Length: 106
Image (tube, rainbow, N blue to C red; front, top):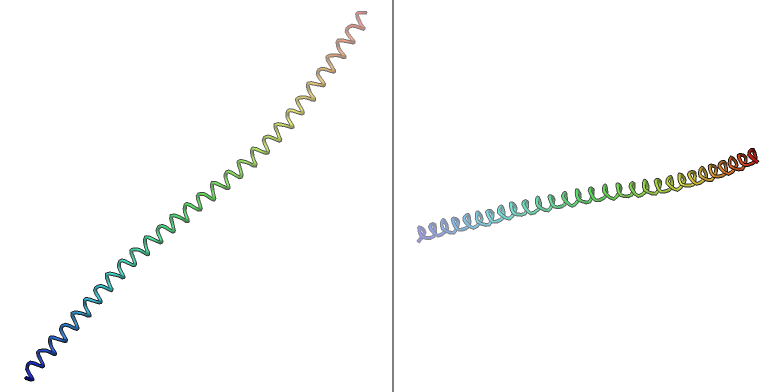
């Protein structure tokens, strides 16, 4: 009977070791899967951060372009005023010349 008990103890020990290896194997597989999931999550986060950075950069460029457009509109308005004043001076000078020309002839 002692021999049977020793065999059972060996069998139980073998089952215990096999079970532990199985559990550790499952744990290792889970760790690998978890690492892969974490890596994918970090990759997506980096892509999101990159997209956010690109969007922010484009927004800044658009803001800069809007400011430049406003400046150009103001400059255009000032130039139109200058042109109108120049046209007015030309008309006034032309009237004076024609009046002086008629006075000299008359």
